[in-house]
Image (cartoon, rainbow, N blue to C red; front, side):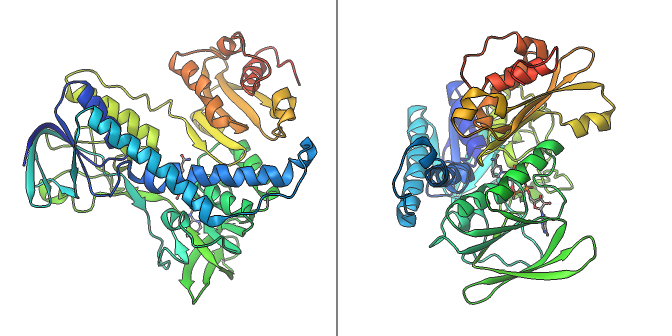
Length: 462
Ligand code: NAI
C-alpha cells in the first residue's frame, strides 16, 4: 500500500502518456495495469500489431504486382505465416518494453493487477488499497458484441483473434466495413484469402467524406475484396472448422447465407469499465455507456477523472494521448487543451485514407458556404513513379474567408500528409496559406499544395 499524487487506471496510449506527463510535471505517479505488458489494446492487440501485418502484406502485394514492372524479376516471395507472426510479436515487444523503460526513467510505479475504486482517493489492486489525491480512469474499450454472433476467437474472431490466426484462411467473412474490418480484411486479402465484407450501411467507413468512401471501396474491390452492402448480419454460427453467416438484405428483407473459414466481427467497440466499481461510487455515465466528464475530464465525483475510449469522442489512440497530456496539466494546476475539431483519422490500408475537420456532407448539413479544392495523385510525379497514382487530396475551405475547414485524402502516405493540414488548421490558416508554402519536389505533399491551389486560381498539374 502506497500513497500517490496520481493513480491512473490503464496503461494504454491514454494512460501511459498521461502518467509520463504527470511525472514530468513533478507528480508522484502510479499506473494500474492487469495485462502482462504495458501499452493497452493499441500496442498489444490493436494499432501496432495490425500495422506490422499491414506492412508485411503490403510488401508482398508490391512484390506480386509492381516488382516486375520496375525490373525486379524473380519468383514472388512465399508467405511464412509463422515468421510473419513472430515479426508482429517482436514489434509488439519492442514497443511495450519501450513503455516499461519510460516508466522506469520517469519513476512511475506499475501496480500490476486489475484496479477498482472503492472510494474517491483510493484504488484497490489485489488486496492492496493505495491512496491518491487524483484518480484518472483510462480503461479503454472492448469489441462490442453482436446479437446472434458468439465469438470464440478461433473461427469467429474479433480483431484480437484475427491477429493470431493459426494459418491464413482460404475464405474470410468480415462483418462491418469500418476501420478494423477494412484494415484486417486487406491484410488477409493480400495474403491470399478470399474476403467478403458484409456491411449494414450502403457505404464503407461511416462518417467519412462520401467521395472518399466511393473511391476507397472501388480501390478495395480492385484489390479483390468483395462487398455485400446494405446487409444486416443476423447470426454467425461456428461449425466444426468453418462458420456460417446469415444476413438479411435491407432492400427486400431477403435472407442469405455465406460460409467462411474465419469470420471477423468488426462492428465497433464499446467503453470498458467493468469491475471499476463506478456504480457504487455514483459516477455518472452517458446513455452510450461512456463515463461522463466535464470540460476538464473530471467526472461528477471530485478527484476522479476519465480519458480516452471510455469517455465520449472518437475511439482513437491519439485522441486518448492528447487527453492524457491535457488532464495531467489540469491535475498539476495548469491549463490542459484538446482541440476536438482537429483530430485526424487514418486508415492504414494501401492506399491510406486520412481525414481531419468537416466533411462536405457535414458542411452541407450546416448550410455553410464552402469551396472544394481537389487534386488527383495521377498529377503527382512521385506518386506516378511509385505506382501510387490512385486517389486524391480534397481540401474544403470557407467560401468567404478561405479558412480551411477540412481535408480528406486517399492516397500514398495519406496518414502522414494529413498533418500539415492539421497544423494549418490549428493556426487558423487559409487554403492560400498552404498554397503559398513552398513544398519540396518531388514529394507526395505537393498534392496537398495543389489541392490548396485548387481552392484558389487552380492547380498547376491538372
Ligand atoms: P466501426 O464503427 O468503424 O465500423 C463498424 C461497422 O460495422 C459500421 O460500418 C457498421 O455499420 C457495421 N455494422 C454494425 N452492425 C452490423 C451488422 N449487424 N451487420 C453488418 N454490418 C454491421 O468499428 P470498428 O471497425 O470495429 O472499429 C472500432 C473502433 O476502433 C473505431 O472507433 C475505430 O475508430 C477504432 N480503430 C481505429 C483504427 C485506426 O485509427 N486506424 C484502427 C482500428 C480501430
